[in-house]
Length: 183
Image 1 (tube, one colour):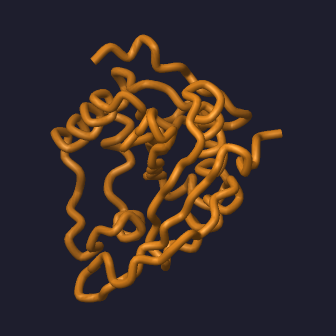
Image 2 (cartoon, rainbow, N blue to C red; image 1 turned 135 degrees about the vertical axis):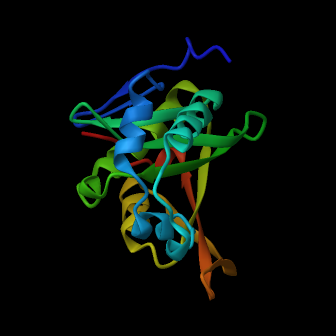
């Protein structure tokens, strides 16, 4: 895939950029944190140490996505964000974000990354709507989405099993006119 047209999206504290050579090392250094894996819907009891091959596979997956960016803060990789299921006819897409660095959580970096990508989606790509799914217990992510302007539009009951417990997914949406832009 030619990623030459993928822009660098720059905010006050966060840069969204394409993958780079050093990102395998950066992803490997972040490891796999059980609590973060749980927030993504994985079973924390099944988390294993990351391997170099898994870090390379993560980088390759980011590179293969047309609308995926690495999130960088303070010169270091902290996660990734992407648009998927892009529908240009209906002018909509889904957004997914993963902050992988435990030290970067709760600092507003994910919120800033979402604002940058949403502004790009609406202003540059001409989209009208973004949607997402988030586990109902992931209050930190829900709060971040709400700061960007997302609203809860529905609940999918018992849609994810983590360990032996069922959890609901919240369905959230953001319209172009509702985006809380960076100031």
